Amino acid sequence: MQEETKQTIWTTRLQDHAASGQPIRSWCAVNGVTEASFHYWRKRLSPAPATSTKLIALPLLGGHGEQVLEVETPTGYVIRLRSQAQVDWLGAVVMALR
Image (cartoon, rainbow, N blue to C red):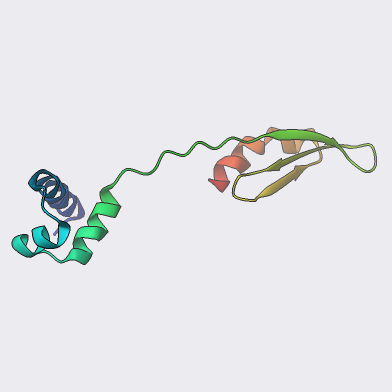
């Protein structure tokens, strides 16, 4: 079965379950699907949670008088830039880390 067909079938099944008002276990038993499959497809087809990532860049003065830009992401990455050329490609680095 093609992936798109499976997604269509499970989208319909999940909508049917929501409309039924039945508990998942009962609905799965009546409709001949496993609870594991139900949970797998519900998670797979649910929209990704909206994330709001805010980065705060703080310019720092390096030890030898050189300009340094340090960025720490919410996930713990620290990016230290020591030249304008590095600052120019910062956007690409941030996109790669997402």
